[in-house]
Length: 172
Image (tube, rainbow, N blue to C red; front, side, top):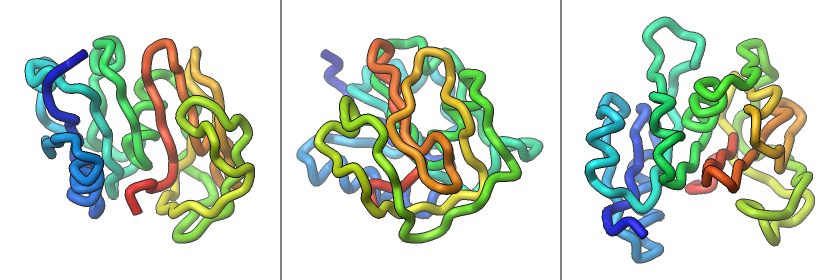
């Protein structure tokens, strides 16, 4: 197992510091790093896991932050949250919808598969959303775990590659 920190990759999210704090509250050391840090520098830190934060951009905007696909091939567990979730899905070839129904604030979320990342989750729950772009289909190899009215894929996982994502903000 890796001995380094949990890296929180900051895509400009108002909650990036909160994500890092929540990790530390679980007695795990975390570091906040900029999205511009090259993947090889991230991996040189020997991270236990990597969390991709939310952010104000759209994956469709010119110059929007991207995720290097090499990150998902490194064998390090990755959790994408909100923009980080969309950026992961987009980088891995999912159908991401820029004309999606936006969801903001408390949102009714339906758990389709209560396993893996969402094991033990109630079938219906309220989550905190802040998005105007939605993942319509999961990338190849992923299973869809949850959906909302505006997000056909609100949570997904590929346990064999240790890749996970949620549209909502669990840190809130």
